[in-house]
Amino acid sequence: MPTSFQKAISRLVRVFPWIRSLLLTMSLVAAASPFAFAAGSELVQLRPRGEVVQAYLLMRENTPIKAVVVLVSGGFGLLKFRTSESGVQWDENVADFLVKNKDRFLDPDTAVAIIDAPSDQWGMGYTPKFRKSAEHVVDVRAVVNDIKSRLPGAKVFLIGNSQGSTSVAYAGKAFGKEVDGIVLSASVFDWAPASWRFLNDSNLSDFDFSQIPSPLLIVHHADDRCVATPFSSAVKYEGKFPLLIVRGGDPVRDGGCGPFGPHGFLGREDAVVAEIKNWIYGRPFKADLK
Image (cartoon, rainbow, N blue to C red):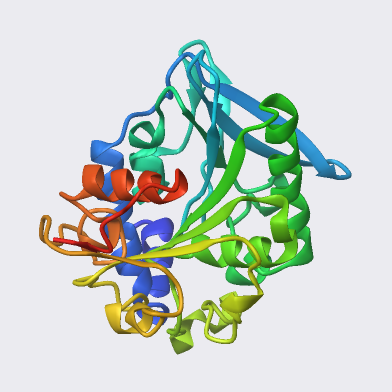
């Protein structure tokens, strides 16, 4: 007989069908993701808004750092960083493309910072409304300023994936030249289903990207199967901003909106990260990654 919890989940799935895909994605990630970050990682906890804790994980090698990529994950982004005897841990069932591939971004020149949801959002995680808020800008700015104090001279790039692109776009507009570049990956440009209205306008349809003063790169898979991020919503920006089109890779293994398929560049992770880093460092990059 179903438990009360199972009955509640069933009701949510009936009301919000997209939750079914989310639950499938979570189960796949939980089976495949590591639980602890490397011992050399440092968990930083800031208080940018009174008693609210904004945590982020800083990963770097013991070498002079030229650039820092600040990763903002999609979905609800609720990683729940904490320390234990085995190192820094996190909730592995929420990993997206960026978190799964954090080690691919890390090298002797490049440090990686992963932002968690602030403590006052731990009940649910990021909502699109909060991702567009002034409070979120304050939190992300605190992380950027802390990174700059730790790694003076290093360039800082914000990278957002899926719903995380909403965070990065709004922060990039507010920061101006405080950061050196913005990367939007598998972004929710247009779509907002009726069942998402309680999350408040979960897309970037009314956003003016020309108001981001720092360089901007858009990354999207030509076969993205997520209903929220069709390729048609990204290709319209071709010619206006640098666009990295990704093709090929492995077929969908989740509901389409998770990391196990084209939405997460499955099977093309090495190449995608390499081209993003080429753009970051001002090197030629492949605009059409076949």
